[in-house]
Image 1 (tube, rainbow over the protein chains, first blue to last red):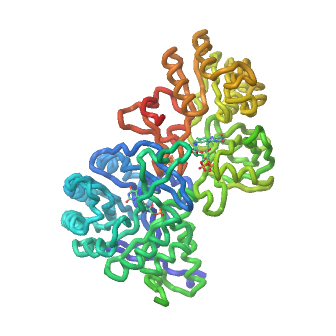
Image 2: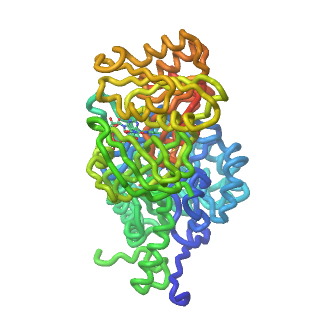
Image 3: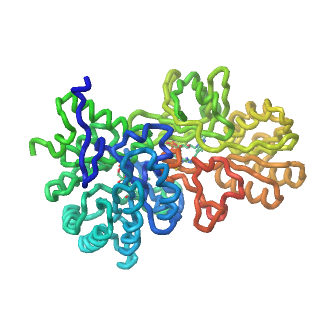
Length: 308
Length: 266
Ligand SMILES: Cc1cc2nc3c(=O)[nH]c(=O)nc-3n(C[C@H](O)[C@H](O)[C@H](O)COP(=O)(O)OP(=O)(O)OC[C@H]3O[C@@H](n4cnc5c(N)ncnc54)[C@H](O)[C@@H]3O)c2cc1C
Ligand SMILES: Cc1cc2nc3c(=O)[nH]c(=O)nc-3n(C[C@H](O)[C@H](O)[C@H](O)COP(=O)(O)O)c2cc1C
Ligand code: FES
């Protein structure tokens, strides 16, 4: 059979990935939490929870709530800060032997630049993923990712500093995601990932108050998949950068929707909570699809959508 | 590997709206410690999507069985009420940090509120077969007589047993924490173990601090992953004004001094 084994490898922003499946930021801890449940060395890449310059406490509980075919979260950016990340979290992550992509977040452009300086040189960091779905304290809390000019300035500053490839993670909470993706491309992004969570809210009607301690939160899971697929499709038409598609991927079939509309790789998030081995199941399912359709390389499927 | 499949051997209504589940699950029956929980997938579809956490009520390692006690409160627990014997569940577990056992010859005061009795039955069971010589005195409170769910299983594993109901339909009339206050005043309890609704735990923690008796509580919080990865199950930690701990990993059993009770959502 080995001669028939499909080639699952893909190239993305100069990274060679054994397969296109990675964990989505914030849903896979720092890898070790899930190590008892799956062989993490099989992942195409591991994307970490957001790292900030200083330690962050995160939002008041409750922080998660199930909603129809999805969930809301308001974790906030709880993390131990960049130095503790490098000292404590990175060494065990390196042991998995797969590319490590570090998700970074900040409140001002300067924060991101310093994070990029520090992390892009750190041993074992393959790329940075820039979380632009966060408020900018210098612009009255306006989200970096909702303004093309702000996005461009942020990305340009990071791209100039970073020794590692820069992946920009786009927010879906915008009127025109294509505009943001073009801004990120022009500013020097090496790849784009999309989508982050959709802003949402749910209410405990008996208690007449929001379920989440933070009032609103980010919606993820199968409920957002059609929105995410549409956004990847639209962005793929307009930019030349490789895309990492995510939003509600539970199975290889779901991942293929993203790949067919133009994603080079995919992120699996909420599904990990439901089935810890979701990522490897998606990998196996992609291989099975390729065999069944006589596709020699999964890369051949990227953007292979017909009938549009 | 901390995951397993479990076959539902027997389901019975333990009280209105409460189900006692007997599951065949050799791995968890062998490994689980009192106070740990399982994270159960209730459907292969999308409703409910996330797993649901339940304390382990009892294990029978030789018979390869575990017991769960489930109160129906919503869609996921509602599904359990419809599951037939033979249903196979996918579960993660045993998860979390359980009760730290008392020292030899101590007197342990176990305080249960409603369905919170489940992890305390496991503790009482472990103490009753241990050679620690611990004297177990238990207090069980609920709104009504009917909600004193599985009280015979609990009582049978304790040296002394007192019940309290809010409507007076069984035992003393009043809150279990009122009985606890009296017991603490008596002064012969070496440590307290409690599980129940959030309001009860806040009061238990307050009383034990007042009487300076070490106390552990099993806490609840909505969970996503159950394994420490999502940071969803945070509760306020006493370590600092903005610190949190994870119920699924550092808990569900905490020493009351580990929790910032004043920052708990009312
Ligand atoms: C460590 C731990 C151990 C638990 N042990 C038991 C047990 O032994 N027996 C038992 O019956 N229940 C236990 N619970 C609570 C149980 O997990 C919830 O009742 C269950 O998840 C609700 O699911 P649902 O789909 O029926 O409710 P949903 O439809 O999701 O919600 C219905 C109602 O239940 C409340 N609720 C939902 N999740 C929780 C939660 N995690 N904690 C408290 N309230 C919640 C919601 O506020 C809502 O009002 C435990 C929870 C934790 C965290
Ligand atoms: C609990 C949780 C925490 C998350 N944390 C982050 C984060 O720190 N940084 C980030 O860029 N995205 C974060 N995300 C967004 C996910 O990476 C992903 O973009 C989104 O959930 C959509 O994918 P999914 O539907 O497969 O979960 C988080 C999502 C969840 C559910
Ligand atoms: S439920 Fe995910 S960290 Fe506890």
